[in-house]
Image (cartoon, rainbow, N blue to C red; front, side, top):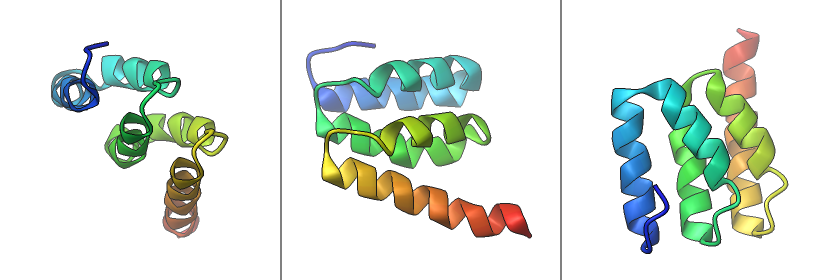
Length: 86
């Protein structure tokens, strides 16, 4: 999972998600500390495919060091909130 190129890490996580969502959830949480903002931004998008397991991932990313990652995570949470309320 921890390949040299960020795109490979994201691709591996996407493949894992297609095969085993529980393992993908665990790997996603591990990747919240990835050194690449690209990887962490992609985690926000992948969180939608994790269902309820994506909530913990988004809560973690709201506190990310990168302002764009934080903004994307907040937006995803806000978009999810109205859907949960109905």
